[in-house]
Image 1 (cartoon, helix red, strand yellow):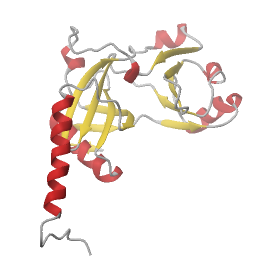
Image 2 (image 1 turned 45 degrees about the vertical axis):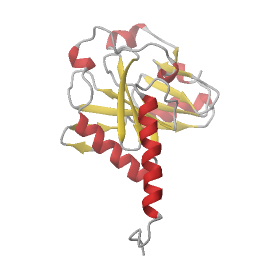
Image 3 (image 1 turned 90 degrees about the horizontal axis):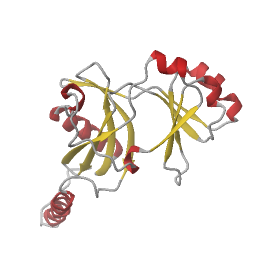
Length: 214
């Protein structure tokens, strides 16, 4: 998706629900590049994995989604959407992976989902090019499009900025009705959201109201 404030994409990914021994061949056919983030689709699992080499792919446990890892300076942006309100929180993420890491590391590195991690990057002394929040116009357009296409009003997305760029972003995860306890000012945001819903219902009950449908 190309927006005047930046470009938003999704890393190349692959759904896997097959014999683990066949995963390397499936990855090759799909044209995915290592390293890959493995996201289990079992609800009880809060652990992700980073697979550095083809052999390590056979140690994964389907069903899962494999997603190309994009270097992003170790910072992730959690974007909370509540109706028309948007709030963004910086969180620590995985560090960049270079050619040396790929050569010197093998196997599977396991780590907790960012949403389950306690570490916040809000008060950290970060490189301004890494810590700069996504442009507000970009977030507003992205949130509006997702609301329209998905029919959701309560959700959040995890975004990263490709390292070395200023306006290239990726959405790497989405959660329907996530926990909002760590969103700044969530009490007021939710109060305003619920009041707006009540006002909409009251407006629709007025005589002469028409939805414009049909």
